[in-house]
Image (cartoon, rainbow, N blue to C red; front, top):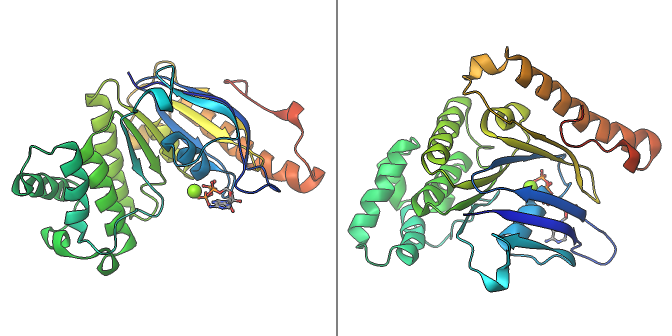
Length: 274
Ligand SMILES: Nc1ncnc2c1ncn2[C@@H]1O[C@H](COP(=O)(O)OP(=O)(O)OP(=O)(O)O)[C@@H](O)[C@H]1O
Ligand SMILES: [Mg+2]
């Protein structure tokens, strides 16, 4: 089980600005949830709250019905800045994290697992001994993804994990992530992206956060999602409709702010209403 209940969560970094305002979200065990929203609306903040790096001022986040203090959720995170220790090599960064989860495995065994993942994500073996500053953004991003794949946590939180990758590598990693999610039946993924098509391809639930102070302004759940290829997605009726809904929600959110100066709650859209 790896269910997450976000209940009426409100959060501010400082006293003068509310970032997240009463967010409610039910993430079932085995969900692949994609979160969309304009830059700065609080997507990474929401992920930090789920990861337990920040505490909400109001509301609560439950894991399988329990408060964080009562349980130790098995969470893995791929942060937007890749979070590799700069003073360790790329490979050792991953081995270090794995050693905590698999203390019985030798360093040699762990290295061999890491190199297998490197191959899967298209990283050269030589990257293992390089320091993060010697790698491109896309290489660092792939190292962070390898680390999260190797740790195989039951909840995976990913913050724009494929943002710095070229189209081919991105497609490959989308496929790897999907395969992993399908293989592990109860694996729950919360995945932030700016890419509507990526969300449609990967998610069984799509959530849009509105502008700050942000809350959920749109949710869509694919009840019985067909396994569609990338080319089928752009011709399938349901996905075409969702795509157009998502784009209009995202655009409407900005336009309302610009033209009316404020956000009208009555215009909130939710639960497949469009
Ligand atoms: N540590 C911090 N202290 C104060 N304010 C912060 C901090 N981190 C983020 N913020 C503010 O919180 C708001 C939301 O930031 P967040 O990083 O969650 O946005 P985001 O939706 O992930 O944006 P992006 O799509 O650009 O990554 C922004 O206004 C940002 O300036
Ligand atoms: Mg962010």
